[in-house]
Amino acid sequence: MNLPVPRLGPYPNRPRPYPPDHPAHLPIRPLWLCRACGSPWPCAQARLLLKVEYADHPVDLAVYLSGLYHEATHDLFRLNPHEGPTPRDLFDRFVGWGPYRRGVVGPG
Image (cartoon, rainbow, N blue to C red; front, side, top):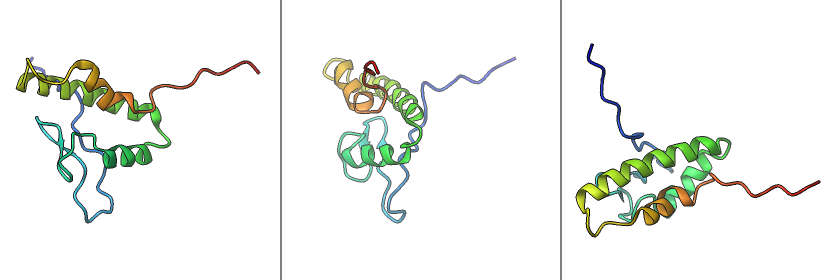
């Protein structure tokens, strides 16, 4: 039996366009630049919209961003393996700003 080959990570379909009649701040792959503003994705507007969209589901946002980090790492290193962004730069760009960390809860 032939099983389908799984994708490396999620397809970037968020954030949804806001306002609805404006272009969505989604990435152009494999360059990972924003379709709406041309900045490295996730751009400031995409980050803001993602935080609002996932406000009640921070773990879902962390999982989504981690999957896109994996996809972007694959794409960007395949395009430019010698002078591309470092893994740390990509982590900060895709995951580091998200809600994946919580502060330490003190006693009492």
